[in-house]
Image 1: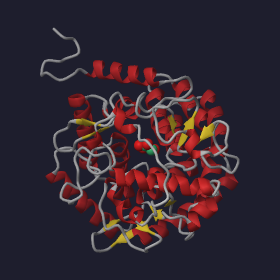
Image 2 (image 1 turned 60 degrees about the vertical axis):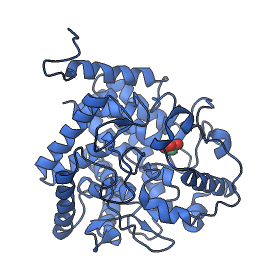
Image 3 (image 1 turned 90 degrees about the vertical axis):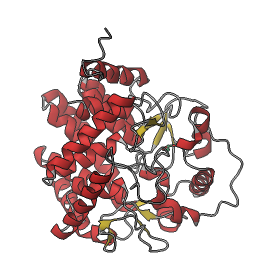
Length: 431
Ligand code: DGY
């Protein structure tokens, strides 16, 4: 009998745990973990933060190392890049020679959702030993510098929100929220380029060519500005307040405040408290009354996306919204729960742009589920929180540790043996 399968035909938890650990160890290139060896062969910012949670389940020193390696690539002004090119690999486009940020180590010129603070606090909560105290003392000022960078460069309205200057910054690269704002980006002058993602994966799982043309045009714009983040965020061709990054930053600041209080970083605590206070009110800017949810908003056209995506439900994780707003968002969530086999689709299946296998236009992502489930539990939506966790575990048991999953059939989509999916199993879904 196959020992990895239990009586009901399901893969055993022990086997899943071992498999998840093996994936993390095999994607570990020494101090940092690649999301997937073929598709993403470098260190990615928010991937590493989630991956650290997985390592913390069996090797807490390695967990700290993951995040500390990421912050080794922090720029002088506090910026933490989306990608760190620790070594060369021509299996990915756009590589370091396209970004030309002139940094050592080589990095991309955009950032990613600021989740590191939340994962750092979570690891600290798992083991408050003196040894781990030193890691917090080392990382806290670095994360603070990154959050100050967001405050300085990415909040032009002074409302505590986050303006994304490239869809890749949001982590949700081809989410339909970016369709209209990105369509306005001039692609007429882009140079020739060759995609590598579709060498590794079926193109039906990846963004369309028109998306890539726009992604490239935005990289070329940033490069032409010598990655001057002030200019890019105030004059650039793509400036969208991302509901996802905004909610994750608010949550991250709340986690930073808890750490600041615990470690007696009094001045920092006051500064963070002001950011949170401003953001709690500022999120009203994203509220779309017609659909009854927080939505991303294009600063150039002034238009709300009017789209409910999985990022919408991160408002619970951020702990924002009036009673009326929360009730409205949870009604939306309950409706999706009754009509969708596996929660949480990245786009609602009744949206005409829904595409069950295509990256951020339908598939379920374990890390987003983790945050939504955590937020739901914290605001008392316990059944929904549990349902999201069980669905996530069921997807992994059915299909393995894929990058994402089809919300209707459970089929895996994107890269296989994906680090953050394995990490979410170990830290959360598999428990
Ligand atoms: C990609 O290249 O698809 C990545 O998601 C960018 O971060």
